[in-house]
Picture 1 (cartoon, rainbow, N blue to C red):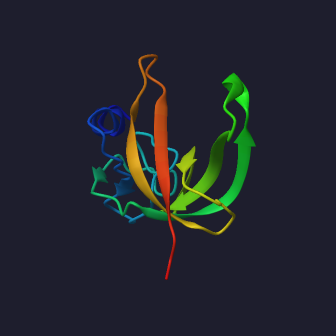
Picture 2 (cartoon, rainbow, N blue to C red):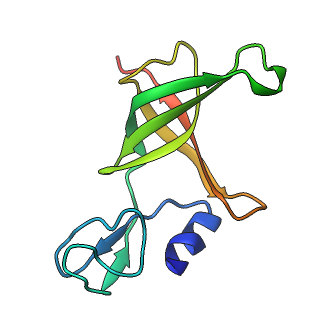
Length: 116
């Protein structure tokens, strides 16, 4: 877990993977939930994903609202904010920014990429 938060604090999303059985360890923890190995690696992650579900929030009086979505990226699912116009389910997105807020909670920010 410490390694996951280290990379996230550096602005990098690295998904823990078990070196023994190649399982993606998500949510991140210090051992594999399949084979119970603690031999975990943190390789780089593809930053492209897709929107599975989304919702708009009009908190703080934002006229256009904020879009939050459940994103599938590299075989895992994250909840993050999404920027773009005419955002819809199944849109492709790219992870623009991630990290830890001042309260040490993770955040993920995505941008819609319209496919040709």
